Length: 179
Image (tube, rainbow, N blue to C red):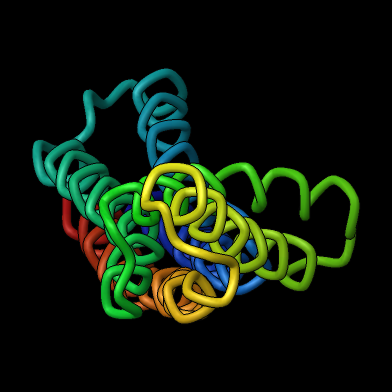
């Protein structure tokens, strides 16, 4: 029994570190889930147990939480652009630009959090501007407010993942300890 509690404690600590990694633009919730699956597989292999239904159920719930977090982050840039008065094309541009900007920012600004967040915000803003000018027929001046809304929305979306990470961590830790 002490082995289960020892591995659950180590899991809780490592998963907590992964949860904090969201602040640095890393997919911390997904890291927690991979760690939980690895914990269950090793537990089944080494200890010969099949794992409790609660642990696998907790992993399933954590996957649902992670998908919700990704959806919130993904759609926040478009919602911010819409709040800034963007057209459909501006919102689509903010979605695409936010994803591309996050990838480019992570590669070209290799400072954790700064590169990804700055790239996502700038990408969402540029995407909203391109969408507004190209599809919405607005001028550069008229597309500034939607671009600012897209950048702000992307920031809010990234920060909104933190409560999702806490929820996933709690669910997984309960699943790890309660067998």
